[in-house]
Image (spheres, rainbow, N blue to C red):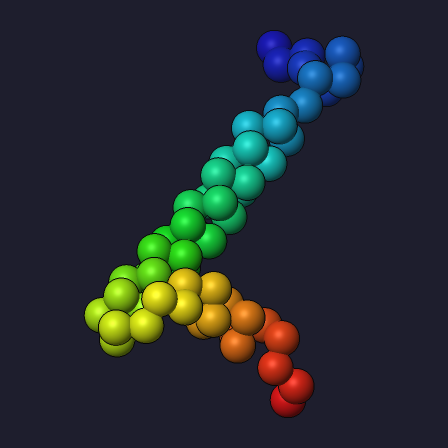
Amino acid sequence: MNTSYLVGESRPAPRVRRLLWLWIAFWLLMLAVGMQKSLWSGKLLVWQQLVDSCCTPR
């Protein structure tokens, strides 16, 4: 018999933690791709890709 709903035990924490790790991994991947693109182009403007994509007026 499952009585976890009576005690109030819920398990959203592992889901939130997993989502946070996925979010961090995604942005680390984006940073690595941006750095690789900067290094291959010969320019050392690592943050330029991030700044251009998020802060330019549309």
